[in-house]
Amino acid sequence: MKRKKVAIVGAGPGGLAAAMLLTAQGYDVEVYEKRAEVGGRNSGFKLGGYSFDLGPTFFLMKDVLEDIFARTGRKLSECVDLRELQTMYRLRFKGNRELVLSRDPERMKASLEAFCPGAWEGYRRYLREERVKYDKLIPCLALPYESVLDLLKWRFVGTLPWLDAHLSLNGVLSRYFPDPETRIAFTFQAKYIGMSPWEAPGTFSIISFIEHGGGIFHVQGGLNRLSQAMAKAVADDGGKIFTSAPVRRLIIEGGAAKGLELEDGTRVAADHVVLNADFAHAMTALVPPEHRRKYTDEDLARRRYSCSTFMLYLGVNRAWPRHPHHNIIFADDYRANVEDISSRGRLSHDQSFYVQNPCVTDPGLAPAGRSALYVLAPVPNNSAGLDWKKEAGPFRERLLELMETRGGFDGLRGAIEEERVITPDDWQADMDVYKGAVFNLSHHLGQMLFMRPHNRFEEFRNCWLVGGGTHPGSGLPTIYESARISAELIARQDRDGR
Image (cartoon, rainbow, N blue to C red):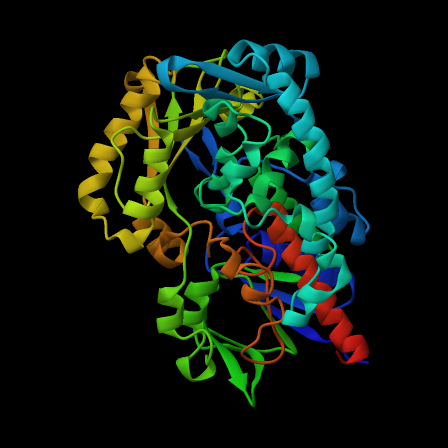
């Protein structure tokens, strides 16, 4: 019997994970990627002798990707070199107060008690209670939500006492940490979903627990090696990945996706189409308006989107061996900075930012004695109308000054040999990210579970969504999970007709 064909738009982490799973199940899989390399925002690049990840630098919940590799007969640990970071990150607050969080209980206790006496007992309770919440909620995120009735199934209803949806993330963490700055150490992770800790649903307290309960990992050579290993698995199992092959539109006939049309005019027929492009961009650029009753241009413009990021990638001719792999420097008034980004749509003078100093773990990313620094500053998405041609230069200077004076990266500006800047405009123009919102649709209650675009796309048949714009949401582990959900739905439809 002829194998069914799947055409996948985009070789980002979701598209690659879906390709792995479907190829291993015997489907004829072809992936079409606009860029010259695989990985999307989980790709890498070089500046001179320096190597950088373009996007994610935290690898969490490795069991999700381990399961995907296992389903294709592989071990993730044999395909990439994983290292758990014993020092999770360094946090720096107003007055240069520092809190270094560790996976080692004794070091963690000493650090917390020095920062805020009594915080250790709150931390122990946090670990106990959030473990229960994590164990209850994670299985629910692994399910598709195709009907409002799915919210009434016992597996979901049974989680309601632990959901904390009526509280903010900051409100949930106040149970454990009365001190505001200690609380920030367990709520700043809201930036992973592009939201404010004072607005994000309390459900997302499990994000910081994922770090503290399961660990933070680095992949030697950069997290982009994950995408490379996934692409190799697809090719080894007979799938095809075409790079520099942009898609012009989806072919939709009789209320069903029938394939793709590439920019060069080539038509690709397929039994299923998997859409891994940024959701809102894909709707407005790849799906003609007559095939979108729900997700019209007007509807997409009204929806709520995450923040964006301003990026600096710096190859510098010196090293900071005392600074750990991950560093987060907070504005003196962190809440005002967050509200500037999420509510007021403006740039803060006193800016919070993140610095990856990966050469302390992975010295091969830079020439000997040098560093490949990755700097991320959350900023408003392009709904704010900021003029980045005007703002980029001054904002860069401000960040470099703060890195030296607040971050402890002394002498940085005189040591830069290579540099790349990415603004929200660049995310939108070069990476096809709608409004430059790099964490996709925001994770407010009205845009989660059944209310988020479905893995089995609602507008027409035989189209399936993977990536941050569908259920379960943004972030590498949830993107991989979206691919597993969609691949299982495809196989079930072909097997059982539903």
